[in-house]
Image 1 (spheres, one colour):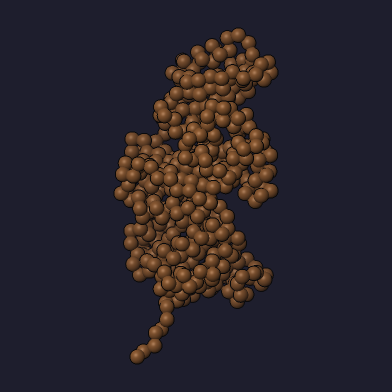
Image 2 (image 1 turned 45 degrees about the vertical axis):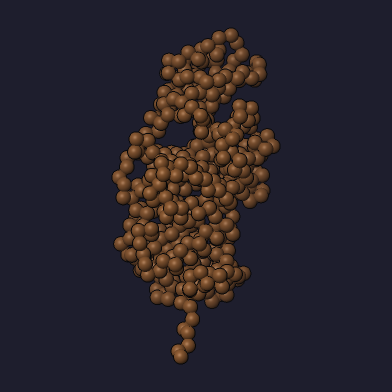
Length: 434
């Protein structure tokens, strides 16, 4: 009787050995037996691309490290390239070359996919290879897999949620402690939830890249980073947080992708949510994504949105998916835009708003402001008057209105002599009358 040749050996070329890359390496080693039982293959990392291969690194033998991508690309024994270096260059060149050479790709690179994803998906299809990217959005939450494999026939109408852990932590701290924005940001940096330069997170650009990816898959249409309008949380004050709570709301940074008349609108913005909305209870650095469609009603996925171990878990899951489907590529590997949908203008979206106005405390102020809103057919739902003298404020919530009309009213109101600072409205999501 012939001896068994043992499990198939699958070798990986890993690009990058930072927090996520080192965790991917350790997870593959720690869970090797379980992975082999599940896939029938022994998966190991053969080569690791780093800038300085001679620098000692914990967790991997020195002979695995190289600073030459050709050592990975030209190795016929390496069938999967895992890209974890981030950015668009040289990541794009590396991923393109890997796909051109018939290697499967796993990436966590949201910026790359939000700008070059459509090209890479088409290339994977042409080369009959695979490209997987679960870790590019929402950390350990398997939202990409659910969209690609479970929601194909769900007739999705909207995908929205909290997709940035840094901003959610900051807003949670502001709501929990009453801290000012700057203090909450400093605390997030102290605890490692925010980078030293947090611009991409607080500006909404990180969330915008993720929403471009989610919208592309959900609506089967190419959505790039430039197609996503984003507003960050820099102008959300502790007063807004306090007034929102008094009105029965909490403030979250949302990514929102919706179909309007079969056209796509994708945006990122701070929003007030009713306290009983499921997303309102998602706190700290956690993420959550809502899927709504005619065939499923609503589904919410939630979990850790960041962290080296959590992101590495999503990367390893993608590696296992690639191995499980080896030799049988199919449509699930190609989230290519097969629907040709146009984009719905922001101005035509109907939204509700919250507004805090700093005003002079004198007779007729509310009447003058109400008249301007009336001229633009903007209907006020409720008004609170706070303080007197230099601290006089009007806190207003509005019925749903076409955004262009509301913007025109706000511009006119900002020019009134009785208004002491620039109006900064915040959208309201999930109201009963929407």
